[in-house]
Amino acid sequence: MVTSVDEISENALALDEDLRIDPAERLVDSTRQSTAVNAEQLAILHRRAAEIESGSVEPIPADEAFEKMSETLLKKRRNA
Image (cartoon, rainbow, N blue to C red; front, side, top):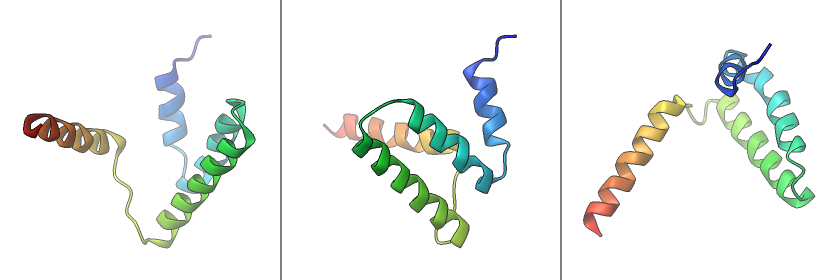
């Protein structure tokens, strides 16, 4: 059985927010990057999860975030 990255991502994103941390940490750890990079990435991951849980930030869907980034980049290119 072959599972695509999109299917894995969809399944992971279907998890409750608090359950997403563990697989995210495992993926980061599996990249075998330097310990410093992994520690920094995990610190950011934990901080962002805490911000979401506390309600200090409201997450937006990835497609919306990517669309906003694309719009910003297009505007900067037009003004350059």
